[in-house]
Length: 123
Image 1 (cartoon, rainbow, N blue to C red):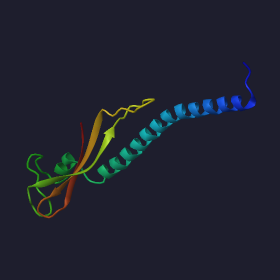
Image 2: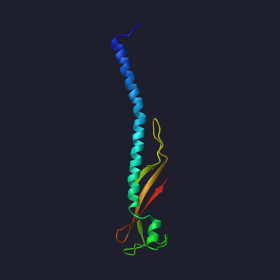
Image 3: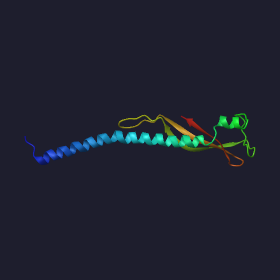
Image 4: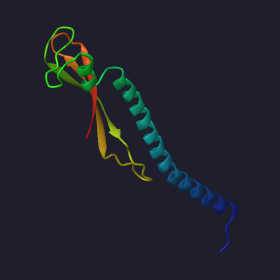
C-alpha cells in the first residue's frame, strides 16, 4: 500500500490537530490555576486594607466576644460575604481539583454601617 501526497498531508494534519487538542488541556488548566492565584492575591490585598477581628479588638481595647462599633457604640455586626474563591487548587491534566474554598467577609456595624473588620474563612 502506497500513500499519495494528499493522504500523507491529511494524516499529518490529523496528527497535528490531535496533538494540539491534547496539549491545550494542560495549558487551559494551568491558566485557570494562574487566574485563581491572581484573584486570591487581589482579595488578600482587599483583606489587608482593614483590620482583622483580633486586630480591631486590640486597636480599640475591646473584648473579642463583645465588640462594639468605635463610632456609634452599636454592639451588633452584620457579616457580608464579599467573595468565595477556591483555595490551593490542584493542577490536573484533564481537570483541576478544588478541595477547599476561601470566604472573604466584611463585618459592618448595624447602627451606622461602618466597615469594622474583615476576615477570611476556609472550608
